[in-house]
Length: 226
Ligand code: C5J
Figure 1 (spheres, rainbow, N blue to C red):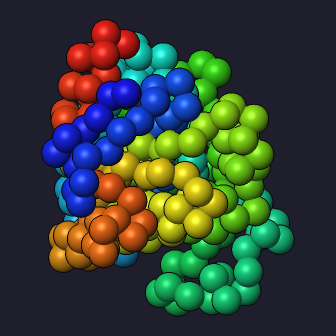
Figure 2: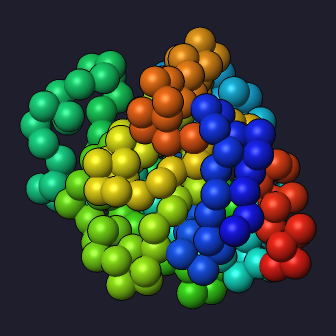
């Protein structure tokens, strides 16, 4: 079985036919200069450093025939799936559903809600629309993974300490083995990013494993799959 020997806290073995790449919330509103994230004062370069490695990762996984699934955080236009507590949070001047620089903020179908061009889903790759931070909550992801026979998840996306972490925790509780790729996940806050990765691998891998994307894709190539 291919094994990422450098993974922390221990080597990560995976079976390519039961492994999926999960790319979380690589949306314009979070990553693009001029988007919602930047308009809140965040440094989007902290997220944009993930674009190139994730694009390379996507190429390798697609070439190897790995399942690829994308997610987007967002809500229905009428906000009926947005809990009042979530709606009330954030800066009073800019809330979910308000007009933003790239359309209504975090509303499905708006330009800013969609995935950045560099990491656009390929035809046939599922895109899971999620109203929460975790990709399992109120979505079809669990059913989809069961149907596909997936047991391991390789995780990329933003932000490390919010939607990536919540999803990895949800997946871990459901029995999935998660490998988080450090260079393909990002946070506006470098310290949160660092600590979030530490937390994944702490205590013998309490939530999963951490490695670099090149160490993971090398294993795909070595296996002759890519
Ligand atoms: C994500 C957020 N995708 N930070 N959302 O992490 O609110």
